[in-house]
Length: 196
Image (cartoon, rainbow, N blue to C red):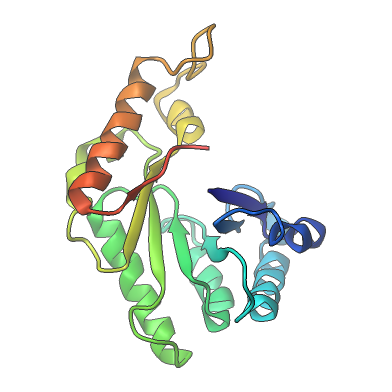
């Protein structure tokens, strides 16, 4: 199980380790307002250092997207504190995973962390454009540990008023996205993770 935790909420971070989740996804993206990004980076780095070596869930950080203008600061802020992994939102295929992998490798070297030790979970279906890149995750990086999809961002990207019908079931485009994420994860031999 994976639990999202806002990276700028010290109280929620304090409770999260006892939640029983297998992975905490500490969020620097959607859960953090632009004015709070740097404070969140500092808080997340301190949290990662405090939790280092303690039993409990694996600690992944969801950074901002590659084209956000925020990812460099996100990685500079958290990588020295050695997260188990990074979650990449709005990943449009294996090229984006490879790009992130290179950025992580540089920061592992700068921080004297084991080369290749930081894993990646990619959110591969948050845009319509990403549908056509799902096959490219296979072989993109040895760091890739999981692949998921985002129903809410996908709905916004394609202009859907809703992603579920009156019974609460995903409508056709979103069922397709879910299935494609499963097949792409299987092809890449990584964990298939359902949307929130």
